[in-house]
Length: 162
Image 1 (cartoon, rainbow, N blue to C red):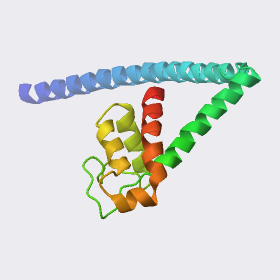
Image 2: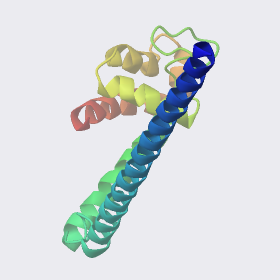
Image 3: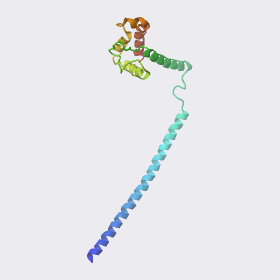
Image 4: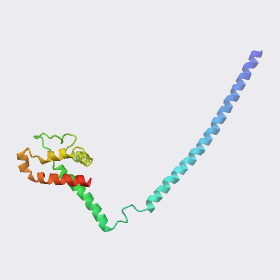
Protein backbone atom coordinates (compact mmCIF):
# COMPACT_ATOMS: atom_id res chain seq x y z
CA UNK A 1 0.00 0.00 0.00
CA UNK A 2 2.85 2.33 0.66
CA UNK A 3 3.86 2.18 -2.98
CA UNK A 4 0.43 3.39 -4.13
CA UNK A 5 0.43 6.30 -1.68
CA UNK A 6 3.96 7.24 -2.71
CA UNK A 7 2.83 7.27 -6.36
CA UNK A 8 -0.13 9.50 -5.54
CA UNK A 9 2.12 11.83 -3.49
CA UNK A 10 4.58 12.00 -6.37
CA UNK A 11 1.77 12.72 -8.81
CA UNK A 12 0.38 15.48 -6.58
CA UNK A 13 3.85 16.95 -6.18
CA UNK A 14 4.31 16.88 -9.96
CA UNK A 15 0.94 18.60 -10.50
CA UNK A 16 1.81 21.30 -7.94
CA UNK A 17 5.26 21.80 -9.51
CA UNK A 18 3.80 22.11 -13.02
CA UNK A 19 1.16 24.53 -11.70
CA UNK A 20 3.84 26.76 -10.13
CA UNK A 21 5.92 26.70 -13.33
CA UNK A 22 2.91 27.53 -15.53
CA UNK A 23 1.85 30.34 -13.18
CA UNK A 24 5.36 31.83 -13.19
CA UNK A 25 5.50 31.51 -16.97
CA UNK A 26 2.16 33.29 -17.25
CA UNK A 27 3.33 36.08 -14.90
CA UNK A 28 6.55 36.48 -16.88
CA UNK A 29 4.58 36.57 -20.14
CA UNK A 30 2.31 39.30 -18.78
CA UNK A 31 5.34 41.33 -17.69
CA UNK A 32 6.95 40.84 -21.12
CA UNK A 33 3.78 42.02 -22.86
CA UNK A 34 3.67 45.13 -20.66
CA UNK A 35 7.35 45.86 -21.38
CA UNK A 36 6.77 45.31 -25.11
CA UNK A 37 3.82 47.73 -25.10
CA UNK A 38 5.97 50.36 -23.36
CA UNK A 39 8.82 49.84 -25.87
CA UNK A 40 6.43 50.09 -28.83
CA UNK A 41 4.87 53.24 -27.39
CA UNK A 42 8.32 54.84 -26.94
CA UNK A 43 9.27 53.82 -30.48
CA UNK A 44 6.09 55.36 -31.91
CA UNK A 45 6.66 58.57 -29.91
CA UNK A 46 10.26 58.77 -31.15
CA UNK A 47 9.14 58.24 -34.75
CA UNK A 48 6.40 60.86 -34.39
CA UNK A 49 8.88 63.30 -32.83
CA UNK A 50 11.28 62.75 -35.76
CA UNK A 51 8.47 63.28 -38.27
CA UNK A 52 7.46 66.51 -36.52
CA UNK A 53 11.10 67.62 -36.60
CA UNK A 54 11.27 67.00 -40.35
CA UNK A 55 7.99 68.85 -40.92
CA UNK A 56 8.93 71.86 -38.77
CA UNK A 57 12.52 72.29 -39.98
CA UNK A 58 13.36 73.39 -43.48
CA UNK A 59 15.97 71.53 -45.52
CA UNK A 60 19.55 72.81 -45.36
CA UNK A 61 19.36 74.50 -48.75
CA UNK A 62 16.11 76.39 -48.08
CA UNK A 63 17.92 79.46 -46.77
CA UNK A 64 20.46 79.64 -49.58
CA UNK A 65 20.57 82.85 -51.54
CA UNK A 66 19.35 82.74 -55.12
CA UNK A 67 22.95 83.05 -56.34
CA UNK A 68 24.05 80.09 -54.28
CA UNK A 69 21.09 78.02 -55.49
CA UNK A 70 21.98 78.96 -59.06
CA UNK A 71 25.63 77.93 -58.51
CA UNK A 72 24.49 74.67 -56.94
CA UNK A 73 22.27 73.90 -59.93
CA UNK A 74 25.03 74.95 -62.31
CA UNK A 75 27.50 72.64 -60.59
CA UNK A 76 25.09 69.70 -60.92
CA UNK A 77 24.53 70.58 -64.58
CA UNK A 78 28.29 70.67 -65.17
CA UNK A 79 28.67 67.22 -63.64
CA UNK A 80 25.90 65.87 -65.90
CA UNK A 81 27.45 67.52 -68.96
CA UNK A 82 30.84 66.05 -68.06
CA UNK A 83 29.21 62.62 -67.82
CA UNK A 84 27.70 63.03 -71.27
CA UNK A 85 31.04 64.19 -72.70
CA UNK A 86 32.71 61.21 -71.07
CA UNK A 87 30.27 58.88 -72.77
CA UNK A 88 31.47 60.19 -76.12
CA UNK A 89 35.06 59.22 -75.34
CA UNK A 90 34.49 55.55 -75.90
CA UNK A 91 37.10 53.07 -77.01
CA UNK A 92 36.23 51.49 -80.33
CA UNK A 93 36.36 47.75 -81.00
CA UNK A 94 39.18 47.98 -83.57
CA UNK A 95 41.74 49.54 -81.29
CA UNK A 96 43.15 47.73 -78.29
CA UNK A 97 43.12 49.88 -75.18
CA UNK A 98 45.31 49.31 -72.17
CA UNK A 99 43.12 50.93 -69.51
CA UNK A 100 39.71 51.04 -71.13
CA UNK A 101 38.22 47.57 -71.01
CA UNK A 102 34.94 45.91 -70.09
CA UNK A 103 35.23 47.21 -66.49
CA UNK A 104 36.18 50.78 -67.40
CA UNK A 105 34.62 52.23 -70.54
CA UNK A 106 32.27 54.93 -71.72
CA UNK A 107 29.59 52.86 -73.42
CA UNK A 108 26.68 53.12 -70.98
CA UNK A 109 25.76 55.41 -68.11
CA UNK A 110 26.30 52.91 -65.28
CA UNK A 111 29.81 51.93 -66.38
CA UNK A 112 30.57 55.61 -67.02
CA UNK A 113 29.77 56.40 -63.38
CA UNK A 114 32.01 53.55 -62.21
CA UNK A 115 34.78 54.72 -64.53
CA UNK A 116 34.41 58.29 -63.27
CA UNK A 117 34.65 56.96 -59.72
CA UNK A 118 37.89 55.18 -60.66
CA UNK A 119 39.20 58.40 -62.18
CA UNK A 120 38.14 60.47 -59.16
CA UNK A 121 39.93 58.10 -56.78
CA UNK A 122 43.08 58.23 -58.93
CA UNK A 123 42.91 54.61 -60.04
CA UNK A 124 44.83 54.56 -63.34
CA UNK A 125 43.23 57.80 -64.52
CA UNK A 126 46.22 58.85 -66.62
CA UNK A 127 46.09 55.60 -68.65
CA UNK A 128 42.38 56.08 -69.24
CA UNK A 129 43.09 59.63 -70.42
CA UNK A 130 45.86 58.38 -72.74
CA UNK A 131 43.48 55.82 -74.21
CA UNK A 132 41.01 58.58 -75.02
CA UNK A 133 43.68 60.61 -76.82
CA UNK A 134 44.15 57.91 -79.53
CA UNK A 135 47.41 59.27 -80.88
CA UNK A 136 48.36 55.91 -82.41
CA UNK A 137 45.21 55.62 -84.56
CA UNK A 138 45.41 58.37 -87.19
CA UNK A 139 42.07 57.59 -88.84
CA UNK A 140 40.27 57.91 -85.54
CA UNK A 141 42.26 61.02 -84.55
CA UNK A 142 41.52 62.76 -87.87
CA UNK A 143 37.84 61.87 -87.67
CA UNK A 144 37.39 63.07 -84.06
CA UNK A 145 40.22 65.57 -83.68
CA UNK A 146 38.32 67.55 -81.03
CA UNK A 147 38.62 64.62 -78.59
CA UNK A 148 42.40 64.98 -78.46
CA UNK A 149 41.87 68.59 -77.40
CA UNK A 150 38.95 68.09 -75.02
CA UNK A 151 40.17 64.89 -73.34
CA UNK A 152 43.16 66.29 -71.37
CA UNK A 153 41.22 69.42 -70.41
CA UNK A 154 38.26 67.33 -69.28
CA UNK A 155 40.36 64.92 -67.24
CA UNK A 156 42.36 67.64 -65.51
CA UNK A 157 39.20 69.60 -64.63
CA UNK A 158 37.46 66.44 -63.43
CA UNK A 159 40.44 65.42 -61.26
CA UNK A 160 40.62 68.91 -59.75
CA UNK A 161 36.87 68.96 -59.06
CA UNK A 162 36.88 65.46 -57.57
